[in-house]
Length: 66
Image 1: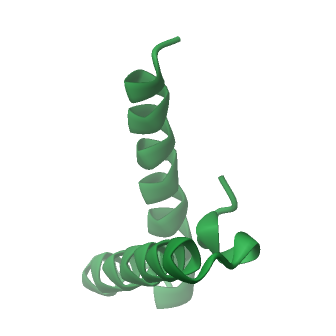
Image 2: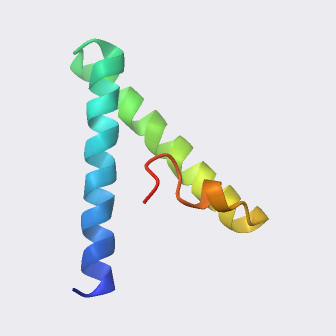
């Protein structure tokens, strides 16, 4: 499987995970779910970028670990 397809599918799985977690945190409110999902995505990306820049292995994979 080409790397770009694998990366695209993994990004979709990440967003799905964040949506489920956001839904659970918000108690099922859709507007809150959207905000939590976006917040989790931002935290994930921040950890990834910081981990790459500072060479912190456990941060490079972000919140979802893949």
